[in-house]
Structure formats: structure tokens, C-alpha cells
Image 1: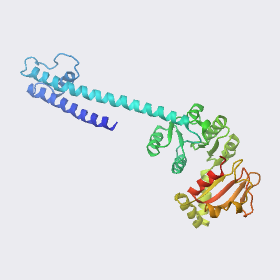
Image 2: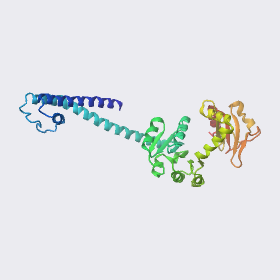
Image 3: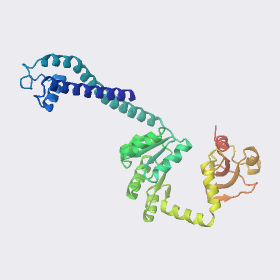
Image 4: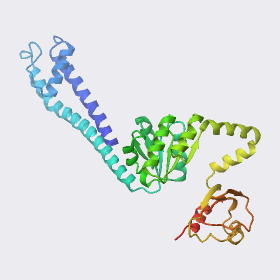
Length: 340
């Protein structure tokens, strides 16, 4: 595409030069008897091979006028055709490239498994997308703003971007919601997020839905509509401001840990049905020495979190470990916990 742009620029310069030289040539040959615009008009109809007769008064009696016209036709028409062909090729190739990209993208989305769909890339969605990109998670972005789609296609080339209304069932189908592991409803309007939540839950009963809600009165409605978690930026912002006042060093520690992904993270590890971890105590697992991971808590499905569990705490299927340690070792532990 860049080569075509360069060719078009060169062709444009050449056609301007030919038109300018042609108009100047007619003006000089006519010794000023013809208006500059008439000379320009004569040049244009000559180069475009329109076929009008000479429009300049006394043209047939003017010495060298027809000689100059023949030279202009031979040298200029080719330049004009080159300009037109280059412009046409740029338009057609650009459209074809976009069409091919769209086709390839839709085929790729159809094959995705366990991906995340982010609906809306405004003040909240853009940060969600950035975080997911840093984790390397396959993401499908949906937004109704073409400028936002174009920007994020450039910024996050690994993300699949769909232009459309996320509340539309057809658009969700194009995002392959049936195979998605999660969907983020981050549109600016609470009512749109509510409608999206209902549509997403109907399309995929198992997908995890995280919805944004600005109005506290809508939060409960989002939960009833099927959202697994509802996040209020205003509420979280207020908690963060208090934390900055009362425990700034803890906040700074957590922020630095979040930024440096190569070191320590707080992550979760699920224990699925049939895992080798089931029926074993934390002492038997010896996570701290084997994986250099610290177990901060264990989530028990029936009773909630068990914080700082004792060494004799026995793990069972369905529980979730909350661990602190290197992210690479967290990935290894997740592999060990899976059922082969």
C-alpha cells in the first residue's frame, strides 16, 4: 500500500507538471491572446481525450499551435492515464485489502476458544484491553465508534476488532460468544450494559460476565440480569482514595507488584474435579519449598475464604488457591492442578 501511495504522489506531481506546462505553452504560442483559464481548459480536454474541437479563438491560424497539441497528446496522455490507473489501483487494492483482512479476522474469531470479549473502549474499556494485552490473552473488541476501532487496531494488533453495536445479537455471534470464557460490558451507558448482559447470558449461559455500572441503583439490576460481577468505577475510586490516605505504602507495594509482571503476583489456582491436589494437605503439597509460592488463602465453595490456612488444611476439588509468587511458577502450578 505504501508503494502505491508513493506512485500516486509521483503521478500527481507529473500530471500537475504536464498540465501546467501545457497551459503555459498555449499561452506563449498564442502570445497572450488567450485567457490563462482557456489555455488550462484546452490542456485538460486534450489530455483527457474528450474530443472537443479547438476552443481557443484563432487556434487554426496560430503557428505551431497544432504541433504543440500533438506533442502534448503524445507526452501528456500517457502521464494522465498513469495517474488514473495508479489512483484506481490504490482504491481497489485498499478496498480489497480491507475485505481480505475482515474475512481473515472473522475466520480467526470463529476458531477462538476461551477468549475475552471487551464491549466498549471508552474510559474503562481501554484499560481493560491494555491489561488483557499485557497478559497475552486473546481478545475480541467490539465498539460502535470507527475511530476507536481504527486506533485500537493499530495499538493492539493481536486483538480482533469488530465495528458494531455490542447489544446486537448478531454482533455478539460474530465475536463467537458461545466459545468465550468471559465478556466485559464496559460501555458508557448503564442501560446498554444491562441490555448487553441479558443478551450475553442468553447467548452463553456459562460465560463469565463482568459489567460496568456507574449508577449504584443499576448495580443490583445488572446482577439480576446475569452479571457475575459488577464493577463501579466511582465506588472503587473512592476506596482507592481512602487507601492512599490510610495505607499508602501497602497501595504502593501492590501497584509496583502489578506493574512488574516478571516478579511477584497474587494469582488464583483452581482445583478441578479429579485433581491430584484433592485430599492432600498443604503440608503434603509443600508449595513454599517446591514452587516458591505462598498460599495466602483458600476459597471454599460453601463457606468462602479461609485466610492464611494452617499446614494441616486439606484441599478438595472445587476449591481455589490464592497464592503469592512468581507468575511463571503460578502457571506451572496450574498445569499440575489440571486433570490430564
